[in-house]
Length: 606
Image (cartoon, rainbow, N blue to C red; front, side, top):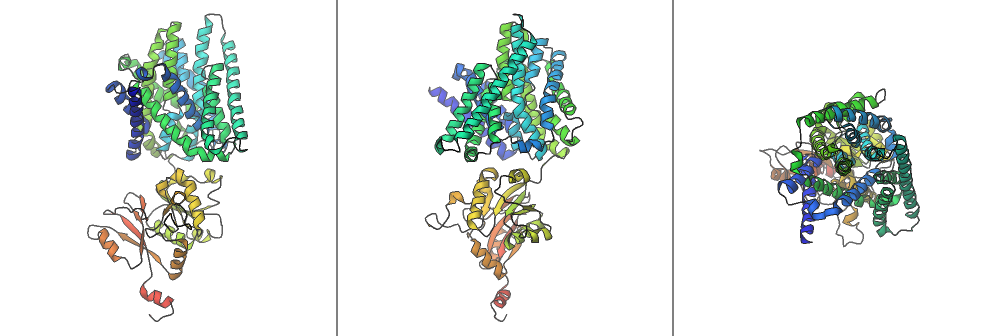
């Protein structure tokens, strides 16, 4: 028992530690998680999943994959699908069979597998998988359409690839008893339809029960998780591997019901998915037997090259031929196709079954599947950013600032940031209030930032910071609280007094963004200072003019607002913390007008 607890703790440390290092370094998380599992497993022997968990390992991994697929399905909104110009439909309906056929030829003629095993393995290779694609997209700045295409393809094709493997295996198993391919396919289509119906009915049941108060708030997330597991197990009991299809349908159906309850549990399910992806990746890579890798042959290397540079590109380019998708995006999608958990898990499962049927090449599937996963993760993980830049499919700059609220203060701030070459946009639901920004050439977003339609019309990945600067402190807090899970709690700021939590008139810190000024200036304070003629001042830190000199040079009452790093990163001075300026940084401060101007403003002689 103690050893199992220790192994579970090590798996968590390795998986989450790899994700943290990926965040700090910008390296692909999936490659680091793979390396962490190999180091913890076959290299050091600290983690031995099969010995620790025994027969529980396979159902643990299966349920984890099901939950990951369900969470991925929850992110698939049909409004996003319409933006792909039919690319996802083509990749599923045309790409899957084309990839299967080309994969069969590569498996047989290059990898040297016998025909039955080649057909089965090529079906499994249809999958790309959200467990690898979503972490890649999270760490890269890919434009909206290719991002949506890769995400949809990964989630939808996962059960398709699994079912392709099942069709092949069931035909091989029943062929000896006189079963025909038509009968096998018909039976599996019926089973898939039933599984899809189960997933849809489960989604409808949740969509009916949650809004009507039949499930208390504190039980909604647990009930949803249990429902997903139940749907997965029930579908698999009818026909093996159809559970993945059922949970995917359930997730997509719920995603398009617009349930407010799902927004409340979104952070929870996202955190669960991060934990599951980290844990499963470490588990599977720690299970790798180095003796199996010694079966690797040079022909397998040629097969991997064919898979990367022939099968995948041909599949995508043929599927998207004559489509409105631009060529640069087609080429990008044609390159990115990492395989992950599902490919390894299903290959290992069918390897054992093929051995029982007398196909000797079944044992090679484990070696080949791990080789494919490692090769695609390394190739695509480390190349996605440079390839995206090369093909010009990157999204808008990710170094910008989104200001919510068109006020004189925010307009002045936006103008100063433009002079510093910082991308900035002002959002407001009033066309009239945005007029000065449009006249000044400042990018604007006209609409209610809290509306659901904003998700489709405004790409938030282009902003590193959000500042709520409207003339309503409660609205500013609401905006910050809404976008904190997506932008990051440390990257949402607002105007408003950073008062003590014990003050009954103050908003609690848990609902607010960070204060825009270290002194916690409120909305009224800013309005008064704007009326007095306060302005912004830029100060560059150098070897001759240090930070202490910059502070001493400020007029009485002035406030430092933000610091711009040489690399373009923005750091704000808040009541809770402040950045440490370095040489080459630029500080933007909010300063009062010269004394003579203030005196004149009071009607006194200068």
